[in-house]
Length: 395
Image 1 (cartoon, rainbow, N blue to C red):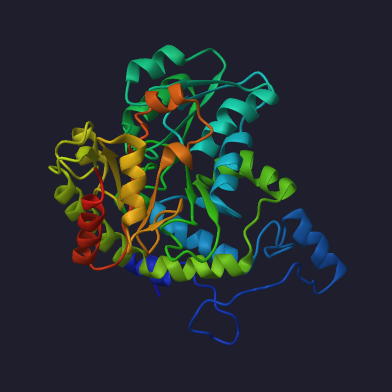
Image 2: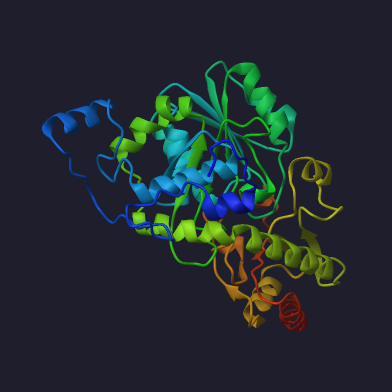
């Protein structure tokens, strides 16, 4: 295929980055090997010096992982990437590789619980200061800036209440002070939002979610420019070893092939379910980025190509109502995972965000009545029936 030919996203996710062996296999090969052999001592020396292309050790790079990274780069519009063992390995690497004692990080306060732990607890142990802000408020980002601010970190839409942050505005502010922007783009996927095009410097994913999309394996990926990865991430990645298993990389390659089909259908079903729930008298609020009543609907329209597969629902009856609803579901199952082909639901206050204080949860809008619904590939009418039956059990 001509190197100059520009392929569309769905084709890139099937064909991109393929590196066939001499056997000419149709599906990508799984290179389950730890190391590689060299034709001579001189060849080994040249490989380690970087004078000869090739693989050295699967902790650094592997042919199957390389195909996954290249395919993700094509989809994201990034120059380079490193695949990691999990989403949190990707987030940790993206942040820690570029800061040192005495630096300062500003992060949006609406973060997944483990991400917030890295910012609030882990980095200060190594002398990196951090400040949490309301990511929706640009003046809060400005007020948090210090002379030693090096990184802005955010997720958008946020977990679990689906706040949407103006990535372009945050990125423009970061450029003014010479800071870099890291975006966790897991809820939107690279199909619905492209942070690099909006001005961000680094994008991280839990590939465990939509990229695999079928509950099979863990994985993560960090994407950015070649210069940033060579200067900051490469050595960190090489020496600390958060590398992805080649088998998992192969599984994720298979997931990417169907990503557009899954995300399109799941997002459409999520929109239908959100609209169905919006006027129910037992529901205090429904938050979905594709609805006109979303608090940041103007930003959603500007930076997202769709509403995502996720819905946040708050019940008027608090925890009791939320638990009754979840326990009455039969098609939708209780699980803290998301982005799966199966519809999954969780109660963030007692699961993913349980380690936050009650004050911090309320600050983020995570009341005891909030549940997070990840919409899958089941028939949407069956999902609506399941939701309605469960709602009948809620006082």
